[in-house]
Length: 124
Image (cartoon, rainbow, N blue to C red; front, side, top):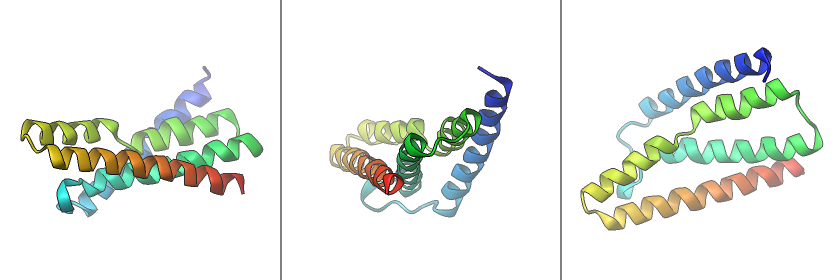
């Protein structure tokens, strides 16, 4: 572990977290059918970008510190499993099993497709 990598991850995390917060503020209150749109959007975009970076790294490697700063840092700070999990828990505590299932399936499916799409674009 180098100090350059640590600083890159720290700076990237700060940037990703601020962008995540801005998306949440921008889309506050948009939640059709029990799906928290801001959380879904950041996780989908993050999955797509992570898939693209993963594919790109295989063909055109970035320096380690930059790659870590973008993936673990920016995308780690931008995406949010903990918020997704909390929103699922809120549906469970409200005994709203249909919304819980819809949100979980939508997020997992969309993020898987987003990551695969990013990978495909990155390999092209």
